[in-house]
Image (cartoon, rainbow, N blue to C red; front, side, top):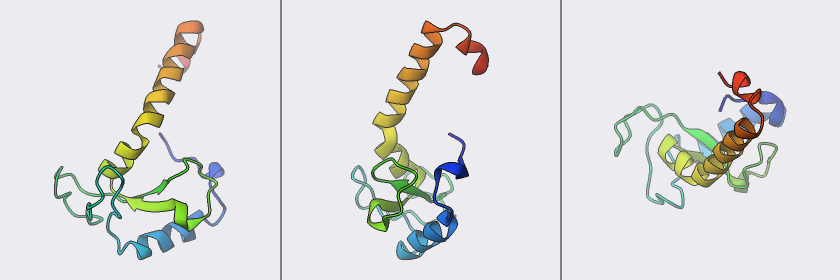
Length: 108
């Protein structure tokens, strides 16, 4: 999903930098992969893809400023954590498209 800056606190870039610094520019590990320490910009030790650390919201709310609810995660950890939410959103999108054929044009 594209990043929408309007959903985040005005000082999000500063918050993000603090989280990355706290994490030592490495993945902080997620519930699915607690020992992950993939390093930003380096090949992921499992997937081999270049690591791009993102900031995960444990409560799934972009407005969250509480840094105890924010984690620096690699793509693998973040996508695994958000998997159920992504599935739910995909199902909602499919349902909307099915119930309103005009919606199909919006996503083409």
